Image (tube, rainbow over all chains, first blue to last red; front, top):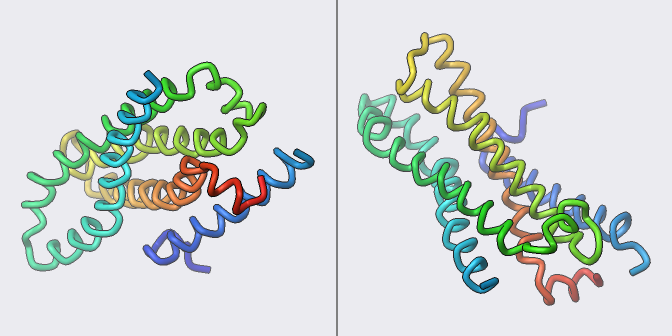
Length: 34
Length: 160
C-alpha cells in the first residue's frame, strides 16, 4: 500500500481521519460522563 | 497578560504553520519542476534557507508563547485533566511537531542544502526523511488546529 504522506491529498485525508479519531478519544475516554 | 501571550502565540503560529504549508503545497512541487529545468539553485540558495530560519524559530516562539498562555494550566493540559483535555491534545500535537522540526526537518535540510557536508547517498536519505517529517507535521497540524481552536462553538458542536 502506498504511504498516504507521499501526496498532499493523502496527507490532508490522514489529518482529517486523525482528527475524528482524537475527537472520539476525547469524548469517550477523557471527558466521558462529564 | 494572557492577551499578549495569545497574540504572540497566533503571530508565531501563523508564521510557523504558514511556512509549513508553503513547503508542502508550494516548494516541494516547485523544486521538483525547477530541478527538471535546472533552476532549483535559486530556491535552494536564496529562498529555502530564509524560509527555514523563520520556520524553525517561529516554531520555538509558538511553543513558548503557548506555554505562557497555558500558565497555571500547563501541567493539567499535558496530563489531559481538569477541563484542559482538548487543549492538552492540541498542546501534545504541537510539541510533537516542534520536535519534528528540530530533530528531523532542520538537521536533514542542512544536509540537503549543503550547509553541512554530505554525500549524494546521505543527501538522498535526508531528502526522504525531511519530506516525510514535513508531511507528518502537515498531517498533525489538522487535528492540532482543531483542538487549539476548541472554543465554545466546538464544544457545543461536539457535545462537550
